[in-house]
Length: 115
Length: 411
Image (spheres, helix red, strand yellow):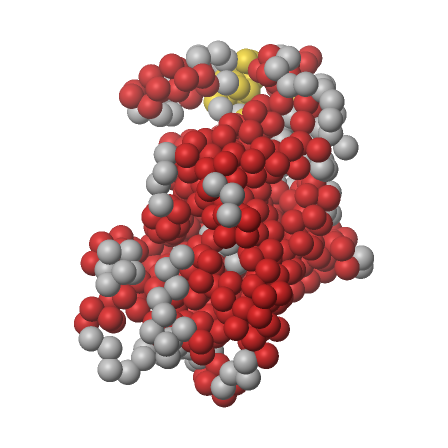
């Protein structure tokens, strides 16, 4: 892999939406974790407001942390099935740890009255 | 193709073209400058058809709505900035629509304005909660067609069709003073902004995904955007032409939304007035729902939440929280007593400022063969797309100075 293609890979992967195996949106690729020294390999996708650090100015990051916290969820690459206009997971969001906020919000919504 | 499939385009367009801002701007444009500004509606309509078709095509092929693309293409920092601008612009627009609906009900029933704002916000929230997406677009889209009374009114007053036809040619009216020229310039920018409101594209592309569009729906997308936007534009031009014919010679300045309703009352009497107010009510209520949902779509898509009203409200809980909270915030703005017309002017100004950054990522992705394959932009879409991108960028640069120099088009 050439340095050019590596840069392209990262730029194409960052900020892509993540869709789980049930077809539901469950996050955005906020950062990427690599492994290796001479030859870098993708290790995991980082999801959550904590992964914005380094991508936003300090004051904006402090604001994000105050509003949304600084949680980061790591999604290992072996849970990724395909990468295209979205990252498609090979498992449901729950298995990747990407459904906690939705489940927390779900408790406040009455599950009746809709056609 | 089922004709009911066109309702997404009709709701998008009626809510976009004959919302509270167009009701005022189209009528004012006609009474102040005659038929000269029809060409700006015409130019804007082609622009919104181009971008709607593009966003629908991307939704069908790449399966991605506008805000996902925006964040991926612009990056986190710039993307957040555009999101913030869009949320503020859509929220102000939504507040203007809620205020507009309350104002129209106040005209129709005499009931207190604030009470009507509260009741209508509750009813609109209930309608989104209860109805699945298909029924939301059909209900508001089809009821908005009552606005056709303005077209009937135009035919009934036997306008000078030749002059209307000449209005489609871009022109600057002769004999304007510098101050009037600046006001004319502001109207051009404001009409372009109102016709190309970004929430229309957010709503349309998300609607395409809500409806499960795929490659087989290319024709539906093309027809929906052309017929829907064409119809919305025709209604707006009818309001302008009625105003040029009826209000201009009488020196009536239609500064409040209710004045436009008189256009149907003059040829059709009592029932014309009732139908015009009813049409305005449904169109503006549809616009309120459209702006609120477009805002919630944007937030949910930017942060990767579950979204959509093809799901039950509890199946996309953060998205549900978002649209309810946005409706309540819009109501709160109305309840402060701020003038609806001031909200309209601010909404138009904010929208034009975020327009270029909304449409750029769409333009880039819809032309990317890696994602779009054989459905990538052809020479026509590419040429028109870039041409309109430069037009809206120029309008965005001119918007703030013109707004300041003309006190929001008030001279």
